[in-house]
Image 1 (cartoon, rainbow, N blue to C red):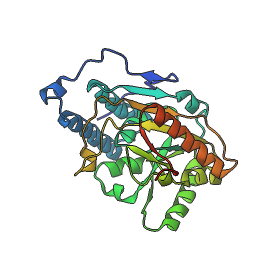
Image 2: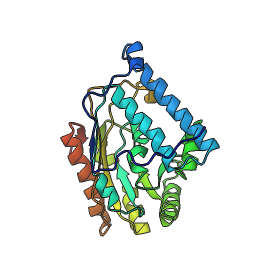
Image 3: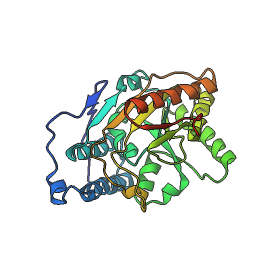
Image 4: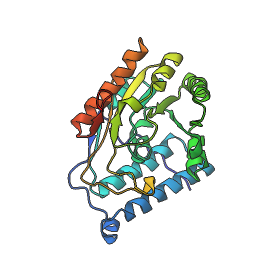
Length: 274
């Protein structure tokens, strides 16, 4: 199995799903339930894991696989909106720490389609995820940094050391400082480790706000939640900036995310709220 050269499917600053995208016949055959989405999404996921195990699984392959998920969402009636891609281009390929909120499984499924052609990057992930078949192969290929979430001091040291090492080799680090994915953004659960890493490695920060609650979290199995087809998908990248004061830098990221989420109709829980 091979993947042809794919290029950059989103070369501009922004993108909006065009009108008139044909609806998936397979979705109709499954009565527009969530079944077709999860069958197709997991097929793409398994194929990506196979590619990671048996091929170089380079940037073109990662972009191509992610783009299949973009088209899947659009074929189910989803509307995808991308903003601030020019802010990624301002990095001119140099590494940065990208800090975003965490809402659903769609983040990692979609983001390679528009971020990977611009930057080489890795994730910070929970160590337990390296036990997940296929996903572990993908994350290892991407040189993800795993943390145990048992010893906070050891996790911090690991992120600082390995994060700086990745950044020194031109690999950006993408992290979601929330403990778990949530449709509600709570800044009290949004830690400062990304800001500390950017300061430690002397690289810029790129804020990332996203809305991906098109796919909800399941009550029994969190990764098999309902589809909310009326909810648009948003990704917006902010202006890259250097850390001069860590507290101010963290607040700048939080303010960027909260402002966009509020504009997109999402729920915000601020520190001052009960």
